[in-house]
Image (cartoon, rainbow, N blue to C red; front, top):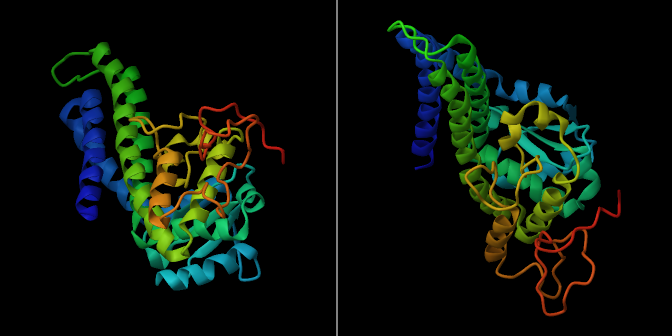
Amino acid sequence: MNQTRTFMLMAAMVALFMGVGFLIGGRSGATIAFAMAAAMNIFAYWNSDKMVLKMHRAQEVGPGHPLHAIVEPLAERAGLPMPKVYIVQQDQPNAFATGRNPENAAVAATTGLMRMLDRDEIAAVMAHELAHVKNRDTLVMTVTATLAGAISMLGNFAFFFGGNRENGQSNALVALVAMIVAPLAASLVQMAISRTREYGADAMASEISGQPLKLATALAKLQGAARQIPNPVAEANPAAASLYIVNPGLGGVRDSLFSTHPAAENRIAALEAIAGRSLHEPGSATADPWPTRDSGADQRPSALGLGQPRRRNPRG
Protein backbone atom coordinates (compact mmCIF):
# COMPACT_ATOMS: atom_id res chain seq x y z
CA MET A 1 0.00 0.00 0.00
CA ASN A 2 2.83 2.40 0.87
CA GLN A 3 4.52 1.80 -2.50
CA THR A 4 1.22 2.13 -4.38
CA ARG A 5 0.47 5.46 -2.69
CA THR A 6 3.99 6.64 -3.47
CA PHE A 7 3.68 5.86 -7.18
CA MET A 8 0.25 7.52 -7.31
CA LEU A 9 1.59 10.70 -5.69
CA MET A 10 4.61 10.76 -7.99
CA ALA A 11 2.35 10.26 -11.02
CA ALA A 12 0.21 13.17 -9.81
CA MET A 13 3.31 15.38 -9.65
CA VAL A 14 4.29 14.46 -13.23
CA ALA A 15 0.69 15.05 -14.41
CA LEU A 16 0.73 18.51 -12.83
CA PHE A 17 4.02 19.24 -14.51
CA MET A 18 2.60 18.19 -17.89
CA GLY A 19 -0.60 20.15 -17.30
CA VAL A 20 1.27 23.40 -16.75
CA GLY A 21 3.41 22.62 -19.79
CA PHE A 22 0.24 22.18 -21.87
CA LEU A 23 -1.12 25.52 -20.71
CA ILE A 24 2.12 27.18 -21.70
CA GLY A 25 2.82 25.46 -25.02
CA GLY A 26 0.03 23.05 -25.92
CA ARG A 27 0.92 19.45 -26.78
CA SER A 28 4.52 20.27 -27.47
CA GLY A 29 4.72 22.03 -24.10
CA ALA A 30 3.26 18.97 -22.36
CA THR A 31 5.76 16.71 -24.11
CA ILE A 32 8.67 18.91 -23.09
CA ALA A 33 7.35 19.06 -19.52
CA PHE A 34 7.12 15.26 -19.39
CA ALA A 35 10.71 14.94 -20.61
CA MET A 36 11.81 17.49 -18.00
CA ALA A 37 9.93 15.65 -15.24
CA ALA A 38 11.55 12.35 -16.20
CA ALA A 39 15.01 13.95 -16.32
CA MET A 40 14.47 15.61 -12.94
CA ASN A 41 13.34 12.32 -11.39
CA ILE A 42 16.48 10.57 -12.63
CA PHE A 43 18.71 13.42 -11.47
CA ALA A 44 17.04 13.54 -8.06
CA TYR A 45 17.32 9.76 -7.69
CA TRP A 46 21.10 9.83 -7.99
CA ASN A 47 21.77 13.19 -6.38
CA SER A 48 19.04 13.80 -3.78
CA ASP A 49 21.36 13.41 -0.81
CA LYS A 50 24.04 15.67 -2.30
CA MET A 51 21.44 18.34 -3.18
CA VAL A 52 19.93 18.48 0.30
CA LEU A 53 23.25 18.38 2.16
CA LYS A 54 24.79 21.07 -0.05
CA MET A 55 21.72 23.25 0.42
CA HIS A 56 22.25 23.10 4.18
CA ARG A 57 26.06 23.33 4.04
CA ALA A 58 26.09 20.24 6.20
CA GLN A 59 29.38 19.01 7.66
CA GLU A 60 30.02 15.28 8.04
CA VAL A 61 31.10 14.09 11.50
CA GLY A 62 32.94 10.91 12.43
CA PRO A 63 32.84 8.37 15.28
CA GLY A 64 34.35 10.85 17.73
CA HIS A 65 31.34 13.17 17.53
CA PRO A 66 28.48 12.79 20.08
CA LEU A 67 25.82 12.64 17.34
CA HIS A 68 27.64 9.83 15.54
CA ALA A 69 27.87 7.93 18.82
CA ILE A 70 24.10 8.26 19.26
CA VAL A 71 23.19 7.21 15.72
CA GLU A 72 25.46 4.15 15.49
CA PRO A 73 23.67 1.87 18.01
CA LEU A 74 20.29 3.06 16.73
CA ALA A 75 21.16 2.06 13.16
CA GLU A 76 22.31 -1.35 14.39
CA ARG A 77 19.07 -1.82 16.33
CA ALA A 78 17.04 -0.80 13.26
CA GLY A 79 18.93 -3.30 11.09
CA LEU A 80 20.30 -0.56 8.84
CA PRO A 81 23.75 0.12 7.42
CA MET A 82 25.44 2.95 9.29
CA PRO A 83 24.38 6.17 7.52
CA LYS A 84 26.60 9.18 7.12
CA VAL A 85 26.05 11.66 9.94
CA TYR A 86 26.03 15.42 9.45
CA ILE A 87 25.78 18.56 11.54
CA VAL A 88 24.14 21.72 10.19
CA GLN A 89 25.24 25.05 11.67
CA GLN A 90 21.79 26.48 12.31
CA ASP A 91 20.09 27.89 15.41
CA GLN A 92 16.65 26.44 14.71
CA PRO A 93 16.51 22.95 16.26
CA ASN A 94 15.55 20.47 13.55
CA ALA A 95 16.66 17.29 11.82
CA PHE A 96 16.24 15.47 8.51
CA ALA A 97 17.28 12.38 6.56
CA THR A 98 18.10 12.01 2.89
CA GLY A 99 19.43 9.46 0.41
CA ARG A 100 18.04 7.21 -2.31
CA ASN A 101 18.22 3.99 -0.23
CA PRO A 102 19.50 2.72 3.14
CA GLU A 103 22.92 2.01 1.64
CA ASN A 104 23.33 5.64 0.57
CA ALA A 105 21.54 7.41 3.40
CA ALA A 106 22.51 10.38 5.52
CA VAL A 107 21.00 11.84 8.68
CA ALA A 108 21.57 15.36 9.94
CA ALA A 109 20.78 17.48 12.97
CA THR A 110 21.22 21.18 13.55
CA THR A 111 23.44 22.67 16.21
CA GLY A 112 20.30 24.20 17.70
CA LEU A 113 18.84 20.72 18.22
CA MET A 114 22.04 19.47 19.84
CA ARG A 115 21.93 22.36 22.32
CA MET A 116 18.24 22.14 23.19
CA LEU A 117 17.58 18.41 23.66
CA ASP A 118 19.00 15.92 26.11
CA ARG A 119 20.73 12.75 24.91
CA ASP A 120 17.64 10.53 25.06
CA GLU A 121 15.56 13.09 23.15
CA ILE A 122 18.27 13.39 20.48
CA ALA A 123 18.30 9.60 20.19
CA ALA A 124 14.51 9.54 19.75
CA VAL A 125 14.70 12.21 17.02
CA MET A 126 17.46 10.37 15.16
CA ALA A 127 15.47 7.13 15.46
CA HIS A 128 12.65 8.99 13.67
CA GLU A 129 15.03 9.93 10.85
CA LEU A 130 16.32 6.35 10.64
CA ALA A 131 12.69 5.21 10.39
CA HIS A 132 12.32 7.38 7.28
CA VAL A 133 15.42 5.68 5.88
CA LYS A 134 14.12 2.19 6.71
CA ASN A 135 10.72 3.01 5.15
CA ARG A 136 12.50 4.44 2.07
CA ASP A 137 10.66 7.74 2.51
CA THR A 138 13.74 9.88 1.95
CA LEU A 139 13.94 9.44 -1.82
CA VAL A 140 10.23 10.06 -2.35
CA MET A 141 10.18 13.20 -0.23
CA THR A 142 13.28 14.65 -1.90
CA VAL A 143 12.11 13.92 -5.46
CA THR A 144 8.65 15.30 -4.72
CA ALA A 145 10.12 18.45 -3.19
CA THR A 146 12.21 18.89 -6.34
CA LEU A 147 9.19 18.51 -8.63
CA ALA A 148 7.04 20.76 -6.44
CA GLY A 149 9.60 23.53 -6.73
CA ALA A 150 9.82 23.04 -10.50
CA ILE A 151 6.03 23.15 -10.93
CA SER A 152 5.92 26.39 -8.97
CA MET A 153 8.47 27.87 -11.36
CA LEU A 154 6.50 26.61 -14.37
CA GLY A 155 3.36 28.22 -13.00
CA ASN A 156 5.16 31.56 -12.80
CA PHE A 157 6.48 31.16 -16.35
CA ALA A 158 2.92 30.54 -17.56
CA PHE A 159 1.92 34.06 -16.58
CA PHE A 160 4.62 35.58 -18.78
CA PHE A 161 4.30 33.25 -21.78
CA GLY A 162 0.52 33.22 -21.98
CA GLY A 163 -1.86 30.32 -22.47
CA ASN A 164 -2.20 27.59 -25.09
CA ARG A 165 -0.85 28.93 -28.38
CA GLU A 166 -1.44 25.74 -30.39
CA ASN A 167 -4.96 26.85 -31.32
CA GLY A 168 -3.87 30.44 -31.89
CA GLN A 169 -5.05 31.77 -28.53
CA SER A 170 -3.07 33.68 -25.94
CA ASN A 171 -5.25 33.38 -22.87
CA ALA A 172 -3.77 35.49 -20.11
CA LEU A 173 -6.53 34.39 -17.73
CA VAL A 174 -5.63 30.71 -18.18
CA ALA A 175 -1.98 31.58 -17.62
CA LEU A 176 -2.89 33.45 -14.45
CA VAL A 177 -4.85 30.44 -13.19
CA ALA A 178 -1.85 28.21 -13.94
CA MET A 179 0.43 30.56 -12.03
CA ILE A 180 -1.81 30.34 -8.94
CA VAL A 181 -3.29 26.83 -9.02
CA ALA A 182 -0.32 24.76 -10.21
CA PRO A 183 2.06 25.67 -7.36
CA LEU A 184 -0.77 25.21 -4.86
CA ALA A 185 -1.63 21.77 -6.24
CA ALA A 186 2.04 20.78 -6.23
CA SER A 187 2.34 21.85 -2.62
CA LEU A 188 -0.73 19.84 -1.62
CA VAL A 189 0.72 16.67 -3.13
CA GLN A 190 4.06 17.33 -1.47
CA MET A 191 2.37 17.96 1.89
CA ALA A 192 0.33 14.76 1.58
CA ILE A 193 3.53 12.78 1.16
CA SER A 194 5.12 14.35 4.22
CA ARG A 195 2.11 14.21 6.54
CA THR A 196 1.14 10.59 5.83
CA ARG A 197 4.66 9.40 6.57
CA GLU A 198 5.35 11.27 9.80
CA TYR A 199 2.99 9.16 11.89
CA GLY A 200 4.53 5.94 10.56
CA ALA A 201 8.05 7.21 11.23
CA ASP A 202 7.07 8.23 14.78
CA ALA A 203 5.72 4.74 15.46
CA MET A 204 8.79 3.00 14.08
CA ALA A 205 11.08 5.41 15.96
CA SER A 206 9.35 4.32 19.17
CA GLU A 207 10.36 0.74 18.41
CA ILE A 208 13.93 1.65 17.49
CA SER A 209 14.62 3.91 20.48
CA GLY A 210 12.22 2.25 22.91
CA GLN A 211 11.27 5.71 24.25
CA PRO A 212 8.12 7.11 22.61
CA LEU A 213 7.65 9.73 25.34
CA LYS A 214 11.16 11.08 24.74
CA LEU A 215 10.22 11.61 21.09
CA ALA A 216 7.04 13.34 22.26
CA THR A 217 8.93 15.76 24.50
CA ALA A 218 11.42 16.40 21.70
CA LEU A 219 8.62 17.19 19.23
CA ALA A 220 7.07 19.67 21.65
CA LYS A 221 10.38 21.46 22.20
CA LEU A 222 11.26 21.51 18.50
CA GLN A 223 7.88 22.80 17.36
CA GLY A 224 7.84 25.48 20.02
CA ALA A 225 11.29 26.68 19.02
CA ALA A 226 10.50 26.54 15.29
CA ARG A 227 7.85 29.21 15.80
CA GLN A 228 10.38 31.60 17.30
CA ILE A 229 13.70 30.80 15.57
CA PRO A 230 13.93 31.36 11.80
CA ASN A 231 15.20 28.77 9.33
CA PRO A 232 16.98 30.60 6.47
CA VAL A 233 17.35 27.45 4.34
CA ALA A 234 13.63 26.63 4.45
CA GLU A 235 12.72 30.26 3.79
CA ALA A 236 14.93 30.29 0.68
CA ASN A 237 13.76 26.80 -0.41
CA PRO A 238 10.13 26.29 0.70
CA ALA A 239 9.87 22.98 -1.16
CA ALA A 240 12.37 21.51 1.34
CA ALA A 241 10.06 22.08 4.32
CA SER A 242 8.65 18.54 4.20
CA LEU A 243 12.11 17.03 4.80
CA TYR A 244 12.33 18.20 8.42
CA ILE A 245 11.02 16.39 11.49
CA VAL A 246 8.89 19.44 12.39
CA ASN A 247 7.54 22.23 10.24
CA PRO A 248 10.39 24.79 10.00
CA GLY A 249 8.05 27.71 9.32
CA LEU A 250 5.81 29.81 11.53
CA GLY A 251 2.58 28.22 10.31
CA GLY A 252 -0.42 27.10 12.32
CA VAL A 253 -0.32 24.33 14.86
CA ARG A 254 -3.35 22.35 13.74
CA ASP A 255 -3.66 19.76 10.98
CA SER A 256 -4.98 21.38 7.85
CA LEU A 257 -4.87 21.04 4.10
CA PHE A 258 -2.03 23.54 3.94
CA SER A 259 0.27 22.21 6.69
CA THR A 260 3.43 20.38 5.65
CA HIS A 261 3.39 18.28 8.83
CA PRO A 262 0.73 16.83 11.13
CA ALA A 263 0.09 19.01 14.16
CA ALA A 264 2.68 18.26 16.82
CA GLU A 265 0.02 17.80 19.48
CA ASN A 266 -1.62 15.06 17.36
CA ARG A 267 1.71 13.30 16.94
CA ILE A 268 2.30 13.59 20.68
CA ALA A 269 -1.13 12.07 21.37
CA ALA A 270 -0.29 9.14 19.11
CA LEU A 271 3.03 8.63 20.90
CA GLU A 272 1.27 8.76 24.28
CA ALA A 273 -1.05 6.02 23.04
CA ILE A 274 1.96 3.91 22.05
CA ALA A 275 3.56 4.47 25.46
CA GLY A 276 0.30 3.76 27.27
CA ARG A 277 0.56 6.87 29.44
CA SER A 278 0.50 10.64 29.25
CA LEU A 279 3.44 13.00 29.36
CA HIS A 280 1.78 14.71 32.30
CA GLU A 281 1.35 11.70 34.54
CA PRO A 282 3.55 11.63 37.67
CA GLY A 283 7.07 10.58 36.78
CA SER A 284 6.82 11.76 33.17
CA ALA A 285 8.92 14.65 31.91
CA THR A 286 6.79 17.58 30.84
CA ALA A 287 6.61 18.23 27.11
CA ASP A 288 6.16 21.97 27.56
CA PRO A 289 9.70 23.39 27.29
CA TRP A 290 8.65 26.92 28.27
CA PRO A 291 6.08 26.80 31.08
CA THR A 292 3.35 29.40 31.12
CA ARG A 293 2.34 31.64 34.01
CA ASP A 294 -0.77 31.08 36.10
CA SER A 295 -1.95 27.74 34.72
CA GLY A 296 -5.14 26.75 36.44
CA ALA A 297 -4.66 23.86 38.84
CA ASP A 298 -7.64 22.04 37.33
CA GLN A 299 -6.54 22.57 33.73
CA ARG A 300 -4.40 19.91 32.09
CA PRO A 301 -1.55 21.71 30.32
CA SER A 302 -1.24 21.29 26.58
CA ALA A 303 1.93 19.62 25.39
CA LEU A 304 2.58 22.70 23.26
CA GLY A 305 1.09 25.31 25.58
CA LEU A 306 -1.83 25.78 23.17
CA GLY A 307 -4.47 28.21 24.25
CA GLN A 308 -2.14 29.67 26.86
CA PRO A 309 0.01 32.81 26.73
CA ARG A 310 3.51 31.93 25.50
CA ARG A 311 6.76 32.99 27.11
CA ARG A 312 10.00 33.36 25.30
CA ASN A 313 12.61 30.67 25.77
CA PRO A 314 14.37 31.52 29.04
CA ARG A 315 17.54 30.06 27.57
CA GLY A 316 17.53 32.70 24.82
